[in-house]
Image (cartoon, rainbow, N blue to C red; front, side):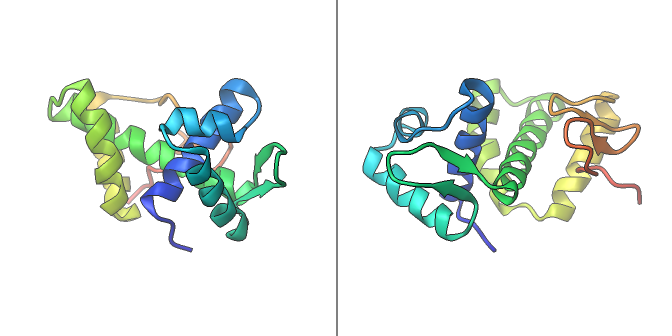
Length: 151
């Protein structure tokens, strides 16, 4: 399944809202993404059809396991590209934040993995914000293998 950048951003926003507010509501998504409730409802219906969320009108929104995995991947990809832009090539925080959203959408997983390995090596990182432990090459939070892989 190939998602649009917009759908990925909705999943990311939902994941963050769940993590910070412990609930996901249409109004909160609209406020976070600066979208109308009608746009959010349209996106929610599309994500529900893809089985990435569970939702009944006027109820709470819940990410499915697959939706959560995709949201985490989107966040991680954004963080890796942003870190590379700031720490390796010296972009400003503001530029890196905006540009990472666009850049990550066109990178293959292979290229993203290479950027992650290079960035981690150059910066001597062993634990990333997401919980990624480079020495064990897995995410501490979700116990899954993540971005870096041995050659």
